[in-house]
Image (tube, rainbow, N blue to C red; front, side, top):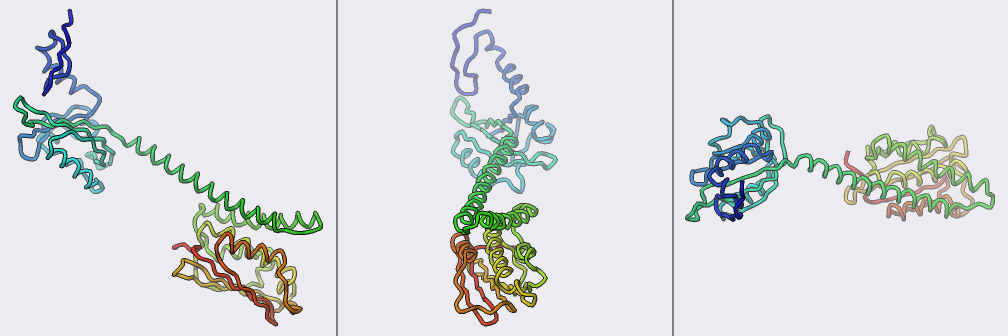
Length: 344
């Protein structure tokens, strides 16, 4: 079969066709339309509500409908509760303006399952230039969307892990820099205790999927090694945001170690009262640590290295403030930190 020159035919004719195939072009076009793997429909632009007049097997397979259930209907039956009104408006505008358009929207199969549909449609004109049909092709983008969503989630997770790792490293850096001792063994033990404090907080976060932690639980975990039975905790049920758990844990650890070494917990009759309240305006927290029954303070106490680390943690990591008051019965510490509470 000798091929003739390709002819570029506009309108509803194919873009390229041989002279031998020209007499059969309608049958060939119908066969190609029906057998192509891409879902396709044709709607009648001369009838009210643009009913479907052709729908290929791929379209029926994609949507789950039979031919008798789609022919004569407007394509809106694919829309559902979460279909974007903006996307539908884009389609209507393109039809009104007689132009091609490509729109991604959420559609629904016969069984109610949603799928993301990349719809491309274009007008088909007759010889006089009047729009007589609309041709639409669909691409199921559901798997692509799912992969994209997983990639976005993975990216957010990596950013969150990076952020949390940086926070922990900043705390460890502070621990190493601020810990002081002329005795190498004592220095190593002090650093180890502080890192273990972070590890206990990390365990809490891990158990709860790195979400918010009850403040009471975060405090009790840190004071248990130093005399939890002599600590009275009082305050409302407050959930601590994940980013604040480890810095606040280190702060409580430093106060507990100091109380066990030099303060109320170093005496059999000593106690610690820890109370707190939420500050709704700043999503913040006000916490009071008060020791009683310990050795009397000899004059004005100077801040030790544990105190320096504790106050630096509150100030640098949580942008908060601390006030320390020495009383005859012991020490009283008031802490305020913003943006650390989370909704239950």
